[in-house]
Length: 263
Image 1 (cartoon, rainbow, N blue to C red):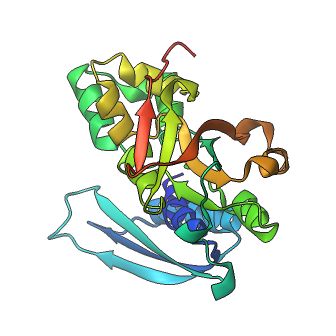
Image 2: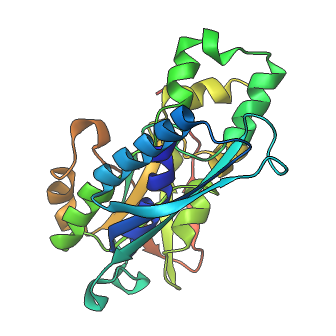
């Protein structure tokens, strides 16, 4: 499933600009090329490209025994998208009174695994023997391309953010224009079971919000009058919900209340 993650981390960043992913390139570097392992990874990349509606057009494979330890490997990806200049999603479209919607994540996505490994090592947990953790930790990142491009085509989005490293706060700040503010109620966020488990391991709310998506994989900024139309473009599993609104304020973002881990 890491091949899907690799594609997701590129294409989910493209669509926030309104761009349609058209091609993908991969890079795989390893201690020693093991064909079965390599084919498995590429199979995941191809699946990710299919979900994103783009083509895997090539890549590079490197065997580097002096750089990587036995059994170790590294993968990277690169995506190209296309968008008409007039349809670019920019800060200029965001207005006072717009709603901020949270689109659910599929799980951890691809951020925070260093902290996850730290927790597993500290608690001496064997993931292979813990079915819940095993399933959650390899669950691939949700690819939002189809839904977001459909909304962009219908001109129903004023702005959007892919919630990756830095969490909700850092990623939304990037798209808020000067003089406006993203006012978010944290207690409205629907946290997922895997994040509740992580929270039990003495991780502060501040660290959880900075390291993980906490259940919000993507954010949309839309006009209030378009709310119902936007919701109708998503399946029940990934149905967005309102977590805040855009206000006139020089602060880029205000996080109110606290995450409710009992939901």
